[in-house]
Length: 253
Length: 319
Ligand SMILES: [Fe+2]
Ligand SMILES: [Fe+2]
Image (tube, rainbow over the protein chains, first blue to last red):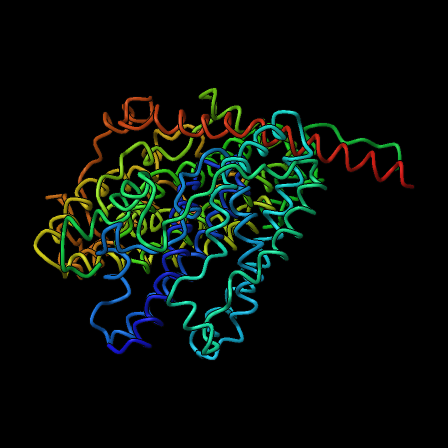
C-alpha cells in the first residue's frame, strides 16, 4: 500500500473506531436507563454510531482491497491497534456523565461532520453526510439533557458538574490532528480539527452557562488514543465486544 | 328519556351487545369494572413482558458477533422498548398510570411473560428468542388485533408488523448457525432444546385450567383459546425447524393426517408453575435489574420535574 493510501486508511479506521467504541459504550445503557423512553433513545443513538462505524470499516476494508473484512477490523484487532479518542472509551458512569460526554462529543461531531461532507474523498463525504443528520438529532437530545440536569435539582446539578469535570481533560484530544490527518488536510480529504476549537468552546460554554454549570478549570489533560495508548478500561470493553469472534475464530455469524 | 339512567344490568347488556356486534370499546365508553380490571391485568402484563424481554436479549448486545448482528439486535431491542411504550399508553387509557403499573411489577403483583425467567446463555439464544418467542408472541398478537378494546387492538396492529420482522431475523440468524460449524450447529440445537418447551408454555395452561379464559373470550379480549393458539404455533414452527435441520426436543411430535395438525407431547406443568411461582433461574434477577434501573434513575426524573417547574415559572414571569 502506498503512503497516501495508508494515510487515508489510518484516518478512516480512526473515524470508525471513534464511532464503534462510543456506540459500544452507549449500548451498555440498554435496559438500564432512567426512563423507558431513554432506553429507546439511547439504543437508537448507539445504533447510529455502530452503523457509522460499519460504513467506515467497510470503506477501510475496500481500501485494503478486502484483505480484512469490516468485521475483522472491528473484532480482531487488539487494543493497541485501536485508534479511537480516549473520551469515547470511558465507562458509562452515571446518566449525567454519559449525557455530558454525548453533549461534548455531539457539539464537536456536528460541526466536524458538516465540514467533512465537503471532503474531496467521495466515500468519506457520503458517510459524513449521513452522520450530520444523526448528529443534529443527537445534539438536540444531549443539549436538552445538559440543561435539564444542570438546572434541575441540586443533586442533578452536582452530578452533571462532576461529569463535566471528569471529562474535561479528554477534550484537548478532540482537536489534535494525527500525522495522517495533517497530510490529508492538505489534499482536502480531512478537516483540520484544531480550527474547530473556538467554535466548540463558544457553543459549549453558552450551554453550560444556561444550564448554570461552570466550565471546568483545566488542570490536567491526557491524550493517547490515536497512538493506541488507551485507558485500562478499554481492554475489558474489547474482551466483551470481541468474545465470540475470538472464541470461535473464522466463522460466519 | 333525558332523566332515564340505565341500571348496571342494562348497561352490561348494551356493552355485551356491542361486543357481540364486533364494535370496539373505547376509553370513554362505559365498561364493566371487571372488564377494565381484566384488561389492565392483561395489558400491563403484556407491556411488562416487552420491557423485561429486553434483558435476556440486551444481555448479548455488547457481545454480538458482527457489526450487522449488533445493529439488528439494537434495532430489535429498541422496538421492544417501543412496544412497551405503546402498550403502557394504551393501558393508561383505562385509568391507571405507568408508574402504578411499574410499582405493581416491582411488588410482584403484576406478571410478565414467564419465558423471560430463563437465561440467555449463548449467542444462539438470541436467534431462538427471535424465532420462537417472538414467533409465539405473533400468533397470540395477531388475534389481539381484533381484541374488543380499541386502543389495545390498534397498538397490536403496529406491534405485529415489527414482531414478524423480529421473528424472521431470529430465524435467519439461527439458519446461519445451523448451516455453520459443528460448534455453531450444537449451539443452535442447544438453544432450541432449552427454548422449545418454554415457548409452548407461553400460551398458558390448558383451556380447562385457564383462570381468566372463559370470561375473556366472552368479552372478546381474547379471541382464541390457549390450546388453539399453541396448536397454531406448533403447526407453523415444526416445518421451520425441519428446514433448519434441527430436532425439536419432543419424541411425541408427529403429523396427524386426520386432524390436519401436529400432535405433540405434554408440557411439564410442574416446571411451568415452578417458574411462574418464582423458581426460575432469573425471576429475581429480572426484577432486581428493573428496580435497580428505576431507582438509579429517580434523581434524573426528579431533575426533569424540577427543570420543568422552573421553566414554567420563568414563562409565567415573562408573560
Ligand atoms: Fe415486542
Ligand atoms: Fe419482538
